[in-house]
Image (cartoon, rainbow over all chains, first blue to last red):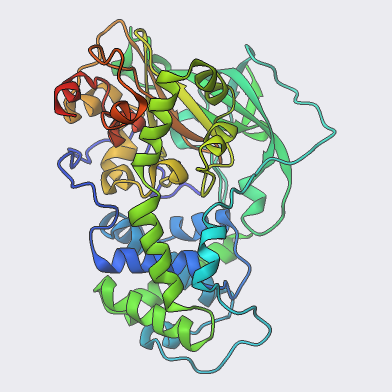
Length: 218
Length: 215
């Protein structure tokens, strides 16, 4: 979606807090929320892309003002309410109006050492052949999408170069709602000078990983 | 997914905003209570995950990886060819490590990592991302003015060095292999690892020379 989350190249956000201290969590509630999201049994279907899309639909002013883990919290709440597992009343009070049948028991603490090593892969075997090859000149698609997509606005309609074929990866646009389909994924480089007027004359490049349906041969 | 679904999601967000307290700590507490009551969460598992990501999984792992790449040329080559297999050699498999690409700084190239659309990060080797990595300012500026961003962190990138910004738009995650600073000849891997900063593996720091006298 063409939402507030698509920050690349936007101006006016000011300096970066380079003096931030290095501890992983800055408030106890941030650590707690992080741990909860690693530990709880999902009561409704949940994909990484559905989570990302739900976060993208936070109202723009809230998205800008809420801390990162507060955005996570809200996305998890909205997913459970949207899926019918919790009511707004339950989320607001923390009191359950009744059990949910048929769900597996929660992860126990002694399972964390196994789960912390789990490494999910998003590529899939395919008999298809990639239609683009390293060195090809490509143009990123101009249009966005109503749902989730991973084609940022700042490269849409711009020319780039195909660098590497990365295999067939699950397409976020359909995976969002559980429709798993793998599509060729490529590393594509864009000359900074082609994206930003102030970068004229610089050798710098921006690299993105883009799916085949995001690209056209230039 | 339809436009109606997106509208419904938006409506739930607004409803939650009007019913829930503004203080996030209270909302997190309510969610935890609800999940426990529903039988979906064991609070001790939450404690354990926090412990793991506070004490065990963090930038020290990335530093160990970098030091090994600096001192073991065969490992260096394997790590650059396949980052995911490379981290598995050190037992650093985990969250967001399934497609890891290690990008190397050289005299002519500097790499910087960002996720403009959310906040993707190589968690199993760097742990929890800094808050600034997740802010609008960093996500907006890193792709457009990487040199100014790095300058804000204290390093100047020479004009003849090419800056490559890696925007993590898919499930590939990036780790920067910084340059080994001069004056560290003969150092063992443990001592070298102590030099390596988290920011140098994100790319907001280029030069580790100033660390040589400090470890």
